[in-house]
Image 1 (cartoon, rainbow, N blue to C red):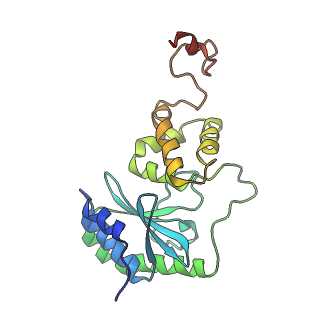
Image 2 (image 1 turned 30 degrees about the vertical axis):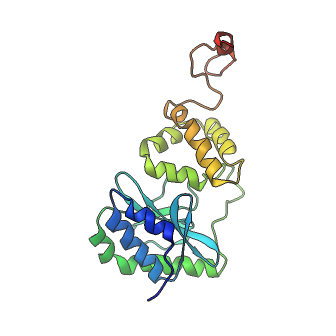
Image 3 (image 1 turned 90 degrees about the horizontal axis):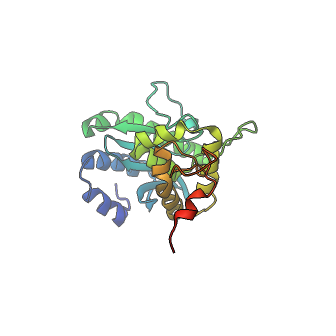
Length: 219
């Protein structure tokens, strides 16, 4: 079968220090199923009819295949993993062995074909009216997959602190800017701090920042 391989995905896989064989095996399955390969969010992305459907990730301890509308999929074996308790739509498969991917290829293809059927029917995960939380942006989910400790720290923040970050992260539609904002506040989140919490210890109105630190700045 002949299909288009995106040159940036070729370069991405060639540069991998780990999970190269696993990522290549996942890639072949997706291309065999007729998805279009693209390069988005610095990750291999697979689309159908111009809509994003699946992203491949390569992280420290695992390679993953993320289904962006994965909660629609039938999963009697319980293979699909939910990234976090607030994740409404994304589900992913985790792999650490290329042979395991090849053994499970038929079932993985079944997930992909079901994904395509949902896309053809125009089905996608919609937030219910009673869901008041802001959906986690894909860029944040990617960072969670890279660093489980970062995800844990975010999930243990109070709902108000989570919401403030999500409003800020999603206020821009540009993926690169979202990554920049997330990375800028990563250390603060790992410390369990909200966007407006004091991080210098000088505030007289803990835990919030009251601007006391400004008097120590020099011109």
